[in-house]
Amino acid sequence: MSEQASAAPVVRFAPSPTGRIHIGNARTALFNWLHARRHGGQFILRYDDTDRARSTAEFADAIAADLAWLGIVPDRVVRQSDRFALYDAAAGRLRAAGRLYACYETEEELEYRRRRQLAQHRAPVYDRAALRLSADDRARLEGEGRKPYWRFLLDARTVTWRDGVRGPQHIDCASLSDPVLIRADGSYLYTLPSVIDDIDLGVTDIIRGEDHVTNTGVQIQLFELLGSGAPRFAHHNLLTLPSGEGLSKRLGHLSLAALREQGFEPAAVAALAVLIGTSHSVEPVSDVASLAGKVDLADISHSAAKFDPAELDALNARTLHAMPHEGVAARLAALGVGGGEAFWLAVRGNLTRLAEAREWWGVVTADGGYGRAEDAELLGIAREHLPAEPWDGETWPRWTRAVAAATGRKGRALYHPLRLALTGREQGPELKALLPLIGRVRVLARLDAALA
Ligand code: GLU
Image (cartoon, rainbow, N blue to C red):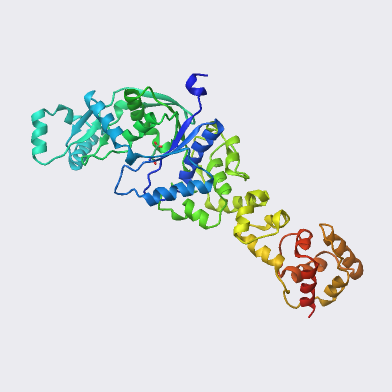
């Protein structure tokens, strides 16, 4: 193993704070965070907020809150808007090296040239006309009120890297247009600040969506010019809807905020976001961090990660059904639900959302009963055979055996009237577990109400 490969990784998640993040962004954040956890590394949250008109502090805070909901607390937070001096210095170095040049073409002029190239069956690559401008030409253009924007002069070579997900990759930079790094208003596009920050923050692994594969050729050239070589790259497949459609920020109901609002478990959202489109099956996990022991970048498949939002309902239910009490104790308390572990173990198998525990807690603690029952005969006999306390998990089978012996009833004819009288519901958690929680006083009150 090389020294770089064995050192603790430094990774970053780099959202633009121009909206809320969705489950697809969570996939990127989680792959980074899990990679850092797995290898004892560092996770940096980097706000790509060079677009000052669209970035807001509110969105930045909301992204941090959404990550915290998933259990991700960054080791370090940086904002690109605090770091312009670094980018200006790097741009200066590129200019001095003759690798950043001023351009003046308008979008219309470029479009016209592109169409002409296509008509001549040539690749629509920027022809570098601006490189041939003399100082006089530039002065004249600026005299006309044109402001330069700045392109990176690419080396016309093929850049290669070994991608942590996709294996050996190559990009022929001769087939790319020299990318614009700085707009005419002086603002930076994403490419240069991203590379400068990755160098400055010591990022060892860039883990991001495969929509960035094509940027990697340009970025590796910048790393090689401005730093001490490129970090490792891993480009994961993107989450898509069953139709193949990508998740855009407009898909509000798949934002983490909306999923949280709908009562989904962070562990279910994370398990789906991470496991889908990998060699693992989508299974519930007890907590988000446990995914670190399970998934590796090499397990990510090369095709799209198709996901049906309906899967989340099923996974959420399965997550709750297996959730240990300590995973939910604080939130149950916040919902006003008591009963400790015994209550949780009794009801968790009936939940699709945590908040439904409130309803069952209401069933356990209700004074009074659920109204008059039709099967008074059975309930009357049941009342006579109700065991004395203390009650435990054996009380229900003991009681119903006695009632069965006294009435000759069995199956639904025995259990259904009892369930209805004791819980007011057709279905629910096992009465064996609920009965000791309800307690003898309340059971008597419910039987009396049913017999009234
Ligand atoms: N701000 C970029 C994005 O959200 C970051 C891409 C990267 O990770 O390099 O797409």
